[in-house]
Amino acid sequence: MTGNHVKVSASGGGEFDCYLSLPAGNYKSPAIVLASAVHGVDIDIQNIADEFAAAGYIAAAPDLFWRTVPGPLVRGDERTGKRSQPRLPVIKTGEADMADTLAMVKKFSQHNGKTVAMGFCFGGPYAVLGPKRLGYDAGIGCHSTQMMDFIQEFDGLVKPVCLIWGDEDHAAPPEVRTAYLDKARALSNLEVHVFPGIQHGYMMPGGGAAYSAETRKLSMEKALGLLKALK
Image: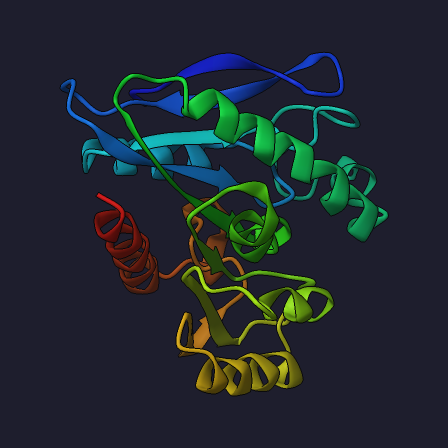
């Protein structure tokens, strides 16, 4: 790990933990904010943040579960259900944390004013909520869940969003993927990829058999492409 844990002031009061990884040098660069899966800001998320920093971008990963069960949880921990339910209200509450993290990032002198929201699983909806109404400039979602509840958020959105699933993702059944592929054909700013033979959680080495190094690499390249366009 090359980053550090910092505290972000919450607009509604209090503060929450955020893993922050900064690039070397003092040049201006975009940032990326990582909205984690239900396991929180674990070593997998921290490594992704460090990878973006090594590529020259500011990376931040806020603890979106600080109000319920804070910190990272190992897979199988029974508290993951408590921290993420009821799902839609928890996602809604997390919008404030994503906005507050963006406000923190904007204070860095090396930030160029542009930021991508990147969501994983539970955090996937922030790939569209970020650019739609939280001030982000683009979004990318990897093995995102609950997405049929947010497909209407693309109405009127002109900022770029990329969504990536595997065709064996139990959290994104065929009807979800079909709906988004149809939406992408109608919207020039929406890019959707469905990789064959790939399961839910493919980005995370800690996820066991679902992990796909090749698909993770392709997803990181898509995210880096969004960041590069914001330089």
